[in-house]
Length: 227
Image (cartoon, rainbow, N blue to C red; front, side, top):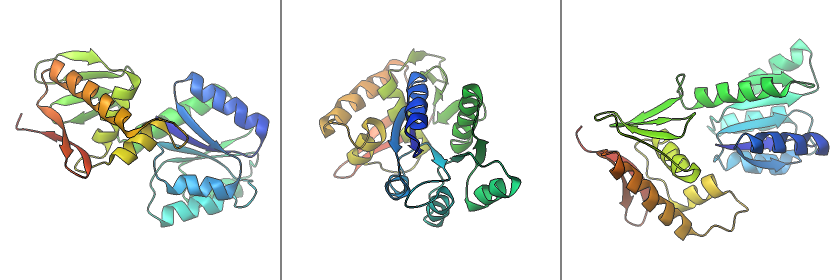
């Protein structure tokens, strides 16, 4: 899962990044509203943690602009403001949840998990497509027709998660590179092809009819023959 954090307080930003990375999330952090909005507009994140008081652009404005552009990524507003009117403004701007500083780490993580489930429409923590299921908690791939399952590596899981969450769409190598390795990664496009090969082998191992199809000149799509 890739999380965008837009927070201008250095110590807070560093602490949150450390906490989230310990929980195995991929995190990109920006310290001002202008660069934060640019990152939001890339639309490659699973959740956005957005501070309200930011230099350049405030969090309310960023959320409004994102929603006007059709970006539906769940947004968690994070701010020192605790007044009811501020919470209402945040939610009316397009935020999905609101957390007031100071807060407990357990509460932040619980709210993030809830937003991630909501964003993928997976209240039970399971993603499904064709004859496969992905357990979002254990990174397990299961074929529902024969019960065969296998543990996925982080990259394999994120490839299938991304494809499953975008059913019916062709996703480019560039989209996979940014989504899974990040903007600042040195990963080459052949990394995408290598992990696509690994993931296909896992699908074959469980006997799934669901396949990752390469669409010539475009990218990859998840398809399933009649189950």
